[in-house]
Length: 196
Image (tube, rainbow, N blue to C red; front, side, top):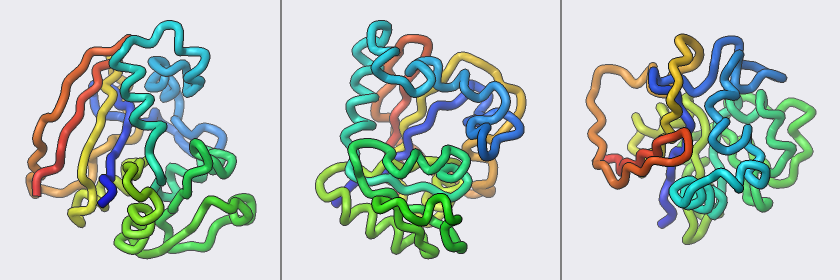
């Protein structure tokens, strides 16, 4: 079965976006700092300064076979123009129909049921991983026991405010098993398995 993996760049104080995130400002005010280690998402431009740990993370990320996210991540990012990477299928969990600007993307499917969305993403990914994007979807998947791994790319900055990754999980403990800690260029890569 395909593994569901949350990949997320995060500030040391736990933010994945700055304040005022929304359409046209997907990472919020100052949130682009979280992607400096990969050249604001331009991996080719960043390649000369990436070290082996960074390249390994990017290769892992880019080898996933499907993406699952919520509307709050997908739509402010412009729907990734319908192709997150390599034409893989994208599953968006939402109770609402897609807005007109995203309705025509052939690789994008909006689904209202989280369990069905995860099942379909796993099926689509085959023997590859499922890339999980966004705080809301990660929190829901954790609570439902549907998230297998967490990869955090800890950026040495304190954003002070914005959107926190794990803000609404509740009081129950979720145990994680450390798999790897690797220093990168201006980032620390942390990898955990979710214990069930």
